[in-house]
Length: 331
Length: 240
Image (cartoon, rainbow over all chains, first blue to last red; front, side):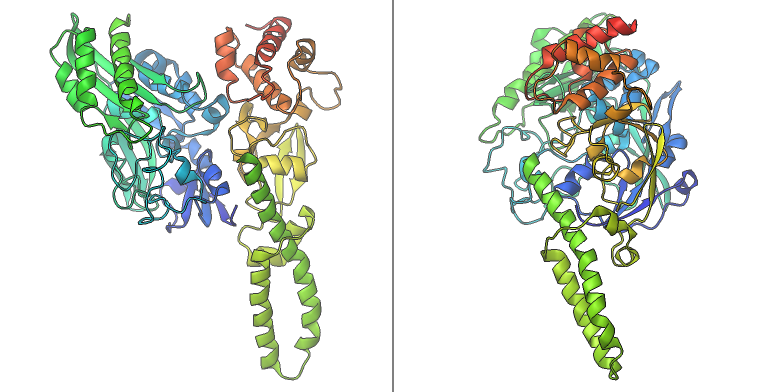
């Protein structure tokens, strides 16, 4: 690991965050950052430890009539185990429960989790010189390489790395807001505006400005949050990233879909909301044929590479299963 | 991959040690020059040596001891990562260490505090061999910086039964009774996760145990017996 200086923020520092350079990095759980620093993929010269800010609103979960407030420094395990979250936002706790391992869920913060970097092996291994994420303009070793794990939605000729997270699928499906804080104060964006599909600089993955950090997430309440679930298909039953996943929330009126919320994981370069599929389901009776029809729409623009064509079929089947499972929920 | 990175990490650390030793050599050679009448010559020489030193720092691996590193004040001046002192609370006792900011909690425990029960497997948070409890919860000490654990209660496999208690923890005995290991390398991490699984009340079903324990890999594949050991310990501890 390269040398870096280390600074620990105090709870009061949230109001006056220190000056930030592009070589600085915030650290919370450290499960992505330290891993990638050991691999020499990320090379910050200063780490700013946010842990003490857990004593502020960044470390709390609040339940309000208009939704759920999740502080960015709440640990994944604590959010997953929260009784109100389990009962009223099952898709949120399931995306957290089914992610990573218990140790990592105990360490990783919600804010860090949504910003985790891709697991693309060509990104993680610096002996591959071609990686536009690490070195813009150097090329993409994955496009002509072994790309079984890679994305089929939201790809570009610059990068096909999969966004690996689960929790983000719940947030984008439920149309969460992100409260961001920085030296210039607070601002709020939609969660769907946080991540950026790969451009010619795919290393820029979010719309956060240097020095800004996520303060909290607000998940709006709605009649669909209780009837929600996350289906995750992967190479092994636990402690594995999704090959394909679907976060689904439904508002049903006597078997007819009033509103559907669908996000797809493991198949896209960013957290992926399948809005066309949602629209296709609206006003319909949800049966297997309608679910399959929606899945076709969700993957209509999918583009397969040499080794990952199976993800299109797998992704559709995963979505169909999730839709029918959520429909069958007794709430 | 893990072994290669472990090797690389070790290599980088050794490079820094070499610097401490080299600096004392340079200092020794520099002193007579400083007393030379042409002061400009002396300064140029110093700059030259400093540049050489920087090159040597980057290129030459050699051996040294970790204790020398943090105590060398000059090292802190030239390197922002150097950190003189760090106090951790491990197994109920205060432990004072001299580590730099890059030192992981795992390396601090093993290499500095002499607590080698926690194991280094992958060093990338993928195997769980390094699992310890921080503030009562199992975490990966290889992905935790030692400085991040300051002020928090750390428990390792050595501290599972409390100071001065030579008896085995119920789960340790259950691992023996249920033949829950072969080579034993993953076992301390398995037991730290297993104890937390029992304490958290997440040992209700086999599926629940397997999910809680999925971050601890066992290449000997003793998984069925590990699950059996946890169930055995649960019945003996009278917990549900």
